[in-house]
Length: 155
Image 1: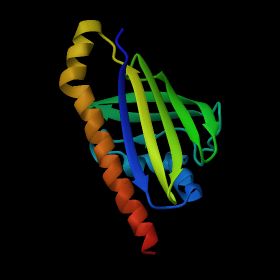
Image 2 (image 1 turned 135 degrees about the vertical axis):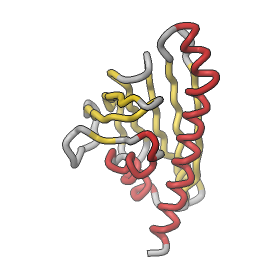
Image 3 (image 1 turned 30 degrees about the horizontal axis):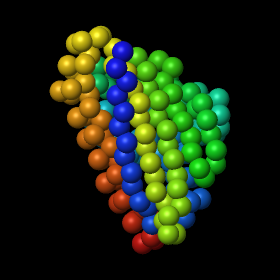
């Protein structure tokens, strides 16, 4: 089984408390997820982020509604948290969110390690679709997050 890794970095000119509060609120996922994925949280809100928190949601992939359950396996306020898939579209999904203060701004680092199902067919699908879709999703997130935090400054 091949483990694929992706890493995304973004600098946000805001204080750590504001940035971490935004990212550690699962309800904000809908704001930063492309509409075509039809993201919906099933877990009753508000969700208190902490180690051991389960989060259930659905997304639409290739036109099919998929239920996805993640577990917050590590949580250190204003530093990092990790969500891991318990059930969903991947054979394995491990997403580490890190927050580093750099020159008065916050560097947000997303590191995703994942395994796709279906052996060789999964590798082909990853090469042509999954990796590209993940890159598009995180590019979209970066754009929306930039717009959100610039908007916050103008309030």
